[in-house]
Structure formats: C-alpha cells, structure tokens
Length: 379
Image (cartoon, rainbow, N blue to C red; front, top):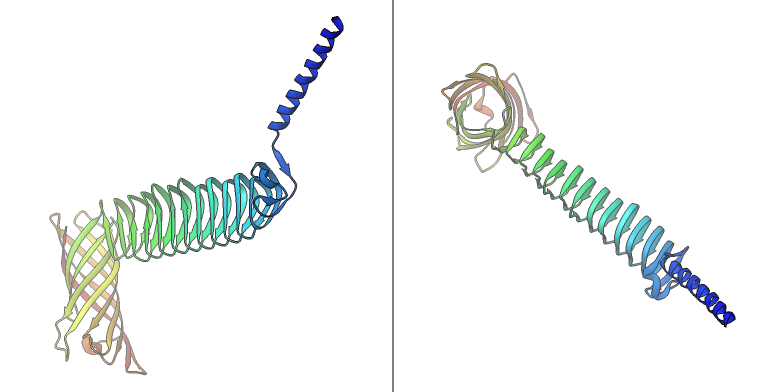
C-alpha cells in the first residue's frame, strides 16, 4: 500500500514538471534564422508563419510573419503582424504593425499600423499612425498622429503635428503645429514657423515668415506675398500717379511691417493705343513718428494694349507718408525704374533716361529716376 502511494506521488511530480515545462515552451516566442518561401503558407515556416520572428525572410510573392529583426524581401508584399527592425523591401507593398530603426521600401506603398521609426520610401504612398524619422513618396505621405521628422511627397503630406519639415509638390496639411512647410500650391497649419508656397498659405500664428501669392493668418509679422490677409495686420486701398501719367488703384495688405501690393490702372498719356496697367509687388512700413513713416516698395508694372508688344517696368520707391487721423494717408517720393519694351510700346513715356539701349527684334531697355504720389485709406 505504501509502495503504491509512493509511486503515485512520483507520477504526479513528473506530470507536474512536464506540465510546467510544456507551458513554458508554449510561451517561448518562435524564432527562425531564415524564412524562405513562395507565398503563405508555402514556406519553411508553413501555416505557423504568422507566429514566427525571423532574422531573414525571402519570398517570391508574399511572406507573412510575426516580426522581422534583419532583412525581409518579397516580390510582391511583406506582411509583418507585430514589429520590424532592419530592412524591409517589397516590389509592391509592406504591411507592418510597427517599425523601429527600420528602412522600409516598397514599389507602391508602405503601411505601418501604429508607430513608424526610421525611413519609409514608396513610389506612391506611405501610411502610418505616427512617424519618427523620414518619409518619401511619389504621391503622398499620410500620418494620423505626430510627425517627428521630414516628409517629402510629389503631391501631399499630412499629419497631426510636424516638428521638422514638409515638402510637397501640391499641398502640406497639419492639424496643429508645424515647423517648415514648402509646397507648390498650398500649406495649412495652426501654429507654424515658416510657410513657403507658390499660391496659398493658411495659418493662425506664424512665428517666422509666410511666402506665397496669398497669405492668411491671425498673426504674422512678415508675410511676403501679393495678398496678405492678417487678422492683426493692416489693409489699405490706394490711388497713385507717377511721372508717366500712369494711375494705379491698388490693394495693400500685410502685417505690421511687410505688405503686398496688387493694383490695376490706366496710362493717361496720349498714346496711339490705350495702355492698361497691372501692378504687383511688396513693401515695408518703416515707422518714424506717430503719424509719419516711410513706405519702401518694390513693384513690377506691365502696360499693354492687348495687341502687339509690351512695356515692363521694375520700380523701387521710397515714399515718406503722413497720416491724417487714423485712416487717411498721403505719400510721395522718388523712384528708381528699369524699363523693358518690345515694338516701342511705352518707350516714349519717359524722355529723361539715365541709361538706355536698343536691342535686336525691336526691343528697348532703359533706366531713369521718377516719382510717385498718392493717397491711401486704411480699411
């Protein structure tokens, strides 16, 4: 009886040990030095491929794994459920849970479900939850959360915040804070340091500069554009006339110092054909006294009869200005002008050129000193 009792205790002991060893083994991650295959599940890890962590993976079409710690290469796609470090290269797409110090390259798109840490390069699209590193895509980089890095895209970059730079062929959009945005058409953010675009910048608070055709902001000290809509800035309507009898009605808008100029007008001299004017430029307010300041302006003017030839003039003017009350300001001052004409359009508007020359194809270049005077009303 005692022998039977003792034998039972031994059996129970070995069963318990076997149970704990089996449980511990079951909890140990499955690892493989190399995962080679055609397409899941036709691979060296078979149906359990999604449970393996691999140091190297190579698949003709597509591979699946839990994690990759070295290199993963696939002709079409890599599907990594959890995490990846090292290098992932796919002919079409990479789909990864998260990356850390990884280089992820795809012929079409990369998708990182949560956090991407490292470099992502795709010919069309990069998608990630957050980014710490660098993204480059032929079409777009789209990040749902924060970006601590640089995004470069042929068309669009998006993120919740961006602490470094966004460069896009068309548009950059950040929901909150951005550092530097450069785009061919539009930039948009709440708080931003620098925005540079070919057409439109939109922000609330700008710490640095906005450079674009149209700049919109709640506060911006240095908007450089033709039209600047700044909530705390200055907007004026101006009428001026210069030494050539060209009269311009212009809209001037900007911040406390820099402003843009956009105007249209007409030349009232006796010309063979009527000459219509279009003006654009930038200026700067230089305050001296409470009602007296100097406005420095650099403008370009085009006169055209909408037929043959053109008159193109670049002007730098220094205009002392005195303000009556809080809204009306009169100004007058000298200008330095450089003129280019074709087919003699407007060449006779000035007869006191300091320097001039006639070129082939009936072109004329010249420079002279002139003057402009006008009045402007603050809106």
